[in-house]
Length: 337
Ligand SMILES: Cc1ncc(COP(=O)(O)O)c(C=O)c1O
Image (cartoon, rainbow, N blue to C red; front, side, top):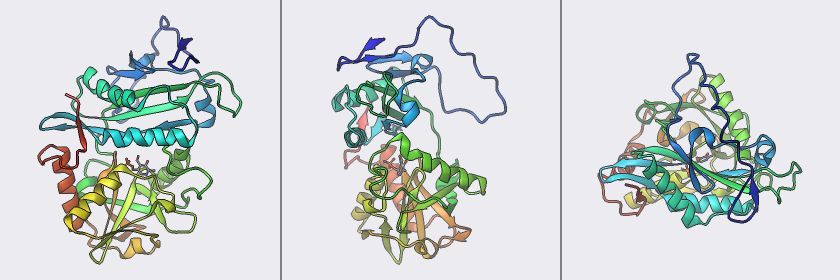
């Protein structure tokens, strides 16, 4: 057992035990895990295989974790974290909603994210900070379970497939709805919210689609299993509001700002399902998915069935900023060289 800054104990595995056996290859696709990298775990850099928890930790039984996901880009000026502060603000908002005491400050977690990139000498990666209720007791009441925090770096490529950013993806409307308001808080990015997301993803993949779009409890468009959604209809850009149980996406916010600076009108309003079929363009946004065009919904082509001109324009601007080819006038990049 070890101590966290707030004085509670935390389960520590026995460091002397043998490393887990390497999995034998079974024609699996390459993993995004680089087991040589170190993970920031409760304030220290530890080896990949040492970042472990006990099976009786609260999080395993009740899904009690909050997390973030964002990219470090290999810009012309060196590695830089995209909207670091906004992601860590959202992490702390998620923790606040669930009354999870954070044993580190926001500044410490932000610094730790930079340290993970620097320490591992990484040029680009996807960062996954996670805070969870740890090991102490099994009751639903989590108050005595200490919060543990980890930050790992993954080598995540193009989330919806290598060609997706250019050609677009085929998606379906999910048979599962996004959670109703006042059930699971949709504004919190918590592990528990990803159980329905897994159903959506599995259903889509099983039926030959790349992704599913959930409707909200009223039947209006909400979001993908891990992405926000935008539609272009008659020259205006539409995206569902927070009240459609979306996660307040940080890429969504970036795209709204870019679009408004281009002079487009962005309307945050309830979107009926059929607008997916008559839209001129549609695209997903997310830290993993970036800006991915949607070329069909339920086998109905969206517009011309390819990446539309407004999507292309937004993509070009976004990718120029994250590559460091354009001035970071929004202050979105934090250097980690
Ligand atoms: C359910 C869900 N919606 C939206 C998003 C997009 O959010 P962001 O752009 O902050 O990554 C994500 C990705 O984290 C997500 O998992």
